[in-house]
Length: 350
Image (cartoon, rainbow, N blue to C red; front, side):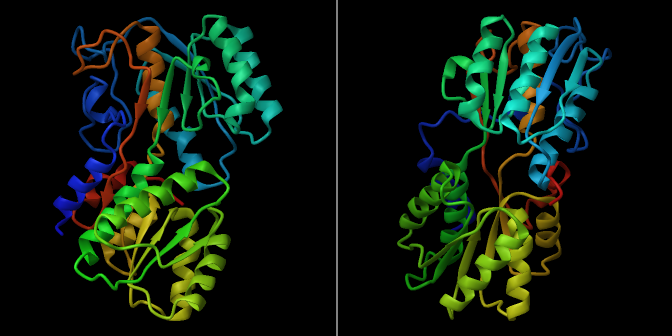
């Protein structure tokens, strides 16, 4: 099965899910260098979304930057805001303390910001204070981890965990689909998390489309240390492997170390999330890692752009609708040596 066919398979499996590409739909000028998060200036075309308007004060809160993907969330938000002279971004210190994050949002409400972009440490715990902000007339843009109540946000920006699994499985099908006896392994994240369960379900569904299944599966914890332990356990359980999907490139650092230490390279690996170091390795073709599936770390930047459009009463370009959509779900593309140049400038460092 060709990669193009694999992409068609992935598209079919996620049919019915609202997927919008922000890069194509914000109506802002496309980044010429591929690495710029936004492009609004006073020199923008008159009448375009990038044209400077009234200043928008945005409060931003996210968990602590304790791994590369999360660090990139806040940094990409900052870069997006810096590109607009009409955005005043106020970033609260990243925290995994729910009570502290609640107090940060309460401060934004008391300060009367125009919008709040919030990636909650715990979506359920942050729901009441987000509702409080909405009731105060401050639109909340919920990023990545959903609130319990959809009314707690005006816009929700999400990655696609199920789609990640579909993309990874479809790629492996494209490489092994003509071998019904191929041994496929999976190194998951934290099994108790819904995002891990969604990724695994998408992977299983996609493999099933080409007659393959998951022969060996081990959970990890999104850290390099956990990835190394899980990969070591996998290698002991599986004397022969043809392909591995590792859910997360941060834990993939440890996974690759375990493979190298064991001298095992009879298989190829697909990563997850889309870190820059993973993409550099794919580009250099210097390991078993041949592809990775993107889970955008630029969601915070997308949240900033949605907040600016909302407050300035603008809409997404290229859509007929006159209001910003209620939900935006990002795509999970497969990055290989053939297309890595398109993605590496917006990837995060793990």
